[in-house]
Amino acid sequence: MTTPSATSSTTTPVTTPADRAREGRAARKHVPRSAHATWIPPVDRPDPVAVLERQGRDRLPELLPIRYGRMGVSPFAFLRGAAAVMAADLAGQPHTGLTVQLCGDAHLLNFGLYASPDRSLLFDLNDFDETFPGPFEWDVKRLAASVAVAARENGHAEADVRKAAYGAVAGYRRTMRDLAGQGELAVWYARVDADRLPPLARPGRRRRVESTLARARRRTSLHALGKLTEVVDGQRRIVQDPPLLEPAGAPDMAALRKIFSDYRSTLAEERRVLLDRFRFVDAARKVVGVGSVGTRCFIVLLVGRDADDPLFLQIKQAGRSVLEEHLPSGPYDHPGHRVVAGQRLLQAAGDIFLGWMTGPQGRPFYWRQLRDMKGSAEVVGMPPADLRAYARLCGTTLARAHARSGDRIAIAAYLGGKDTFERALTDFALGYADQTAQDHAALGAAITAGVVTAQPGV
Image (cartoon, rainbow, N blue to C red):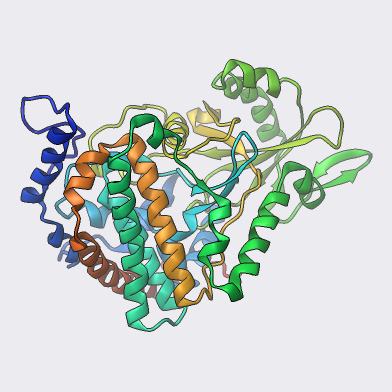
């Protein structure tokens, strides 16, 4: 297995576009593009359930049954929560050594809508818990595999499953090659505006996409105020919905108030001024996601000018990326700093309230806005043509993100002008979709046998 590197393997510095392209083509000698097609689990492959159990050791034990219950719903739900399983599988294969800032969990539902600081609605990556520097193809393989798993769950014919996975990789390769020919500022400023989404859908589903965009634009802190809070004894309080949303206890509340100033210090100066115009009102513990269930997560209600000027922030525990044990050390010692820096690097425009700090017992956390015009596609039930278009959009978006941190010219040269890479990763995606179905069945068997406890329907 080669070692990831963002620089040339020779002693001569890679400076010109021609040099960088030669570096990318040279990587084919170590890992031919066709070699990505194969997925054969090794005989000593770790038990997937054991990997999940090990990952849960530093999580809240009373919430782990919710995690297993959510992952047990379907193979796609399992894949969403099994980034650690796939990271170990990818680490066992040869890789290109062409390094980018990886999302680390680039499945279909970790792309979505959010508001830029200028209040435009953008489409981009939206989950960075596992972000870490590593070989670019790891993210592409996870995306393609998630497309294949989702297409099968939707009952698509195998030919359509293949086309959807192929489309994701084609979107990535073609976008990376386009970006390789652009200047540095053009690449940095590139973004995917949400208005590009409706034309991708068939006429019969275009209205549904437009409705999704409209809902996202309404999902602001003010909208959340009516959904997530109530007035109790004249005071605004976050509603209770156990076990998914519970009041923060007195110790947690005191700790959150104390660490608020530490978080503030990681913001830019002008954003500290803005944050200081809000006051802390209430906090609650919240269960989030699928793979993240069990991590410590809180939401905080702040108010500004008056009670109708709210700001909701989410404080989430940050751990080691699932990629860290398989790759060289990254540039950040603090896991919260790793998440925030990775998000800022990968997203076209970032949340102005991103920050990090260390909480009680030395646990690292990061902060972000809870709702800021966020939304996601309805992948379940998506027809084949729409899934192909959406998968291609995700591939395009992933390439744009990678081009900001990695050597896009070298990666584009490695990918080449033909569809060799697409065909190889499509084969991999279908093979790994089979593996995911088997792993999901293994989790189901472990639940039935009482090895792990699952709480379904939560």
